[in-house]
Length: 421
Image (cartoon, rainbow, N blue to C red; front, side, top):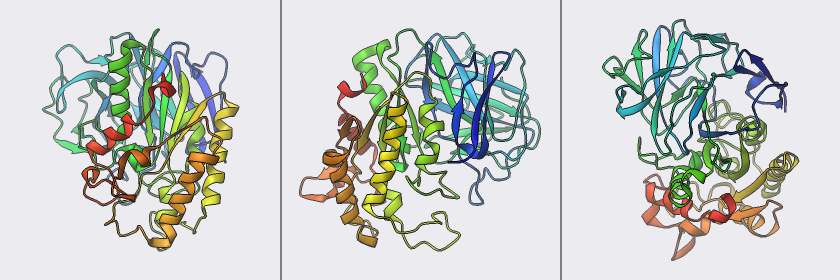
């Protein structure tokens, strides 16, 4: 693991330097990375723009209106703006938060400007993140919010989160505080330059992080439906516990791997665990569901999104899991592993590179030999009752590998609430 992460307080705003987008965190006195009433109600792991992504050229004299979905509520909020993978300083001339009425439109009177160290604008250094000042405003659980950023200067390749499964919006010029969505004439399915929204709550029982790949990211769930399994878990907790429910933050990246980085799908799980899990405010536990991409996509040519992609063994993946367990336990955090869901019978990669054999061995390790604090049997919850090596066709999203909305809900229902209460 390389790079460094240094928390700096500038007025009331916390700027986090994150060289290369990952690394160890050092908190200076006065920083608020351990909670103190704050939990992470929403999150998305930052990624670098790629040549195949519209985020590559970035934005200039434009406003991006990011649409997000909270997990728990509170009496104040703060937003983390990310230039983690930027090659130049990022200037935010104006930023706001409002309640979504529909599309890019906001509920009347709900839009509020954010401040950074008391100022309306902020410049975020390359490789850094900045936390806004607390904004006293009521945030409801399971609510769609719009985080709007006006970017007056060319940003260069954009720190983003691809595969958001959510439409966000772009406007020419400064429209950060507009209530109407009329100026937002373009849409995007990425989140841009934000990676967390915290809420202040005296009742929420900490933060639970969902950490994984595309099946945690919610790939092939309904666009705008907030139908990822972490969303369904947040709904279960809210229905059962109300304002005592813990926050659930989704740190999945489609295509991500435990052991290897990717030019398209982020740094490895081992490399980003500190940034995406251990730095979350109010952190109590993490649920890990990852590993499929390490052994399921072998043989891709040099220069592809999966390069480098050397063949891996089950033992290597299990050693990667053990590294995550050690990091979590060293920070006093509970860590739960989910079994990897089975492929559908018609998935063309199921027999490639011994996929089924490795999948079975790794899941057996999670069930019987792992040293995590608990196991969640996602695989058994969604498997085909007539074929234990395949997924129930009722949960097929259509691509032969990822669940549909119903499948994601079944996964969330398989999590014992005793683990996350």
